[in-house]
Length: 275
Length: 310
Image (cartoon, rainbow over all chains, first blue to last red; front, side, top):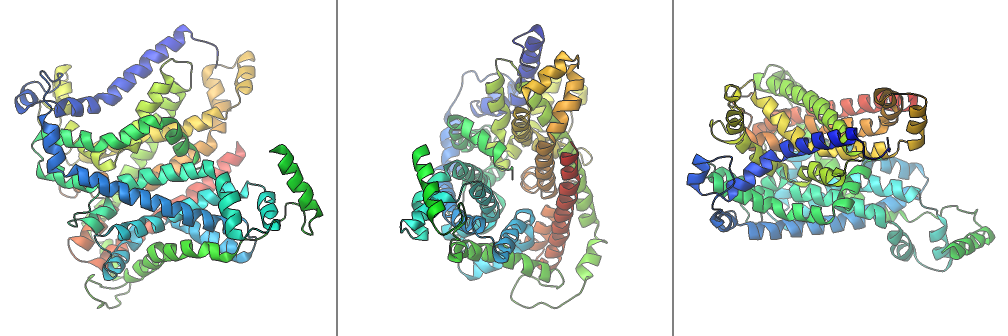
């Protein structure tokens, strides 16, 4: 297995790099498209843009109102993740450190939410949110994401807290701290690794979610990036260069964050799902 | 750190409670989460399951009990039955190909090749991008024009005869959509398999090699059995993802041509928000929920038994 770089390794390297090039072809097509003017798109679909034109980017940014969409997405994602971390870790602390029938049933109740497709409650919830006047608001979206992502968040936190020794909190309590103080100052800092995973998985999911923001925010002026892009692409569907520029701009922020935090993101995705 | 930890333990022994015993936190800690969860998930799901047996139009409170009529209708509705078939075909294709490719990619980058870290980042990158954007990207790749996207590539390499209307051909469209999902999610399977591969003890593989076991034999008898937990997670995730597929369909084909790419999720969405048949829509949602739950339980049971057998 680990026997140094041999001719076989070189052959594998060539095969894998070739696979990556084929894998990246759609990205190449999209990015080059964004830099071409209509004549180049028609005549030279696969070549590099010559000369590259950047006009589409400014137009796409304005037409899709990407600036405000990014702001909406950031606000909704950050607030939801913050609420999820607070509510999820508190609940999990109770569930993990209480050995009663009630706490066990409650834990199972939360787990049910992981396999329950949200489509089942989609329409009643829509009515509920509508009746409360929360359609088209940030608060409505934050409430929705908190509820829908809590089962998974509680599951991750509970598993992690169970693996921590109970001694630390007991010591803090003996020293006269309240339960909330013991949690905030002793337990929560110990949860940093799993909080990182919770943050990454929830943030990526919420940032990219499409269906619910389409339903709840459509036409409100508070649309998130995927909803704006959906409307934008459907409006300018035949203007390939413009559409491509819009897609590149809309995908760029999360890709940049991913490149900076790649190690943490990949670790979060590959470890977060183990019970 | 060690000293404090020991000090804490000594204190705990002196304290009246047993060492390491739990001081239960107050149940109030779970109340905020439970309230939000009940409001957003539990109550709507129960209410939805209930309205599957009514003729609710979604407007106002007026609804009457119609028994299992909605379910009878479902099994005589060509669109819904087609959607059920499409959903199952998509799910099988995605589970098999996405995880197969994911495993190959993981095995490929879990080696000494110099580009292994860069390749992991490349193959994983689409996972963090919104499915809406990935769908639109592939919609361009599948452009029916002979001089754009995939068709242009086929023409350029002398395979012009294979040019297709990838999303416009009713028998091809569903596989084109499936491939888009696979392209986006293969990297997800890859990183989960990679985490599994990192848990395979190197000494075990080395001693097998010393005993003369070839690459294939080592994979079959050592690596593959030890990958069982990663297989469980991957199959579960891709199955639930496939069964509830929605965004990619809406963005690429909107269920068309005809009903050729409708899934249970797109049908229940259209029934509710296009045709105003909320009762019927929740009946479709209930069938979907039962599918997801049944498949999850069967798979957990089967795959867990494989894990323990290994």
